[in-house]
Length: 101
Image (tube, one colour):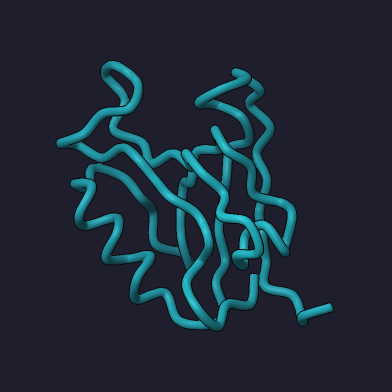
C-alpha cells in the first residue's frame, strides 16, 4: 500500500485495550472513505493486523501499535488475518505495496 497522507483506517486492541476478550491483537474498526486503505481496497473492517513492515504486532499496548502505524512511512506492508473481528473468517493475507493506479 503506497501512502502519502495517513493509512486511512482506525484500529482497536492492544494489551491494554483488548477488543476481543483474552486477545491483545490489533483490529481494523473503520476504513476511512477516500483514504489509502479504501483506495487500495484489500483491507476490511474486522481484519486483524499481524505485522506492519515486518514488525509483529504482539504484546504491544494500543499506543505502541499506533506509533508503529504513524511512523510506517510511505511504502507500507501489512500482514493480515481477514475478518477475524467481525466475520470469523480466518483468511491470512499479505498486503504488499503497489504502485498507485
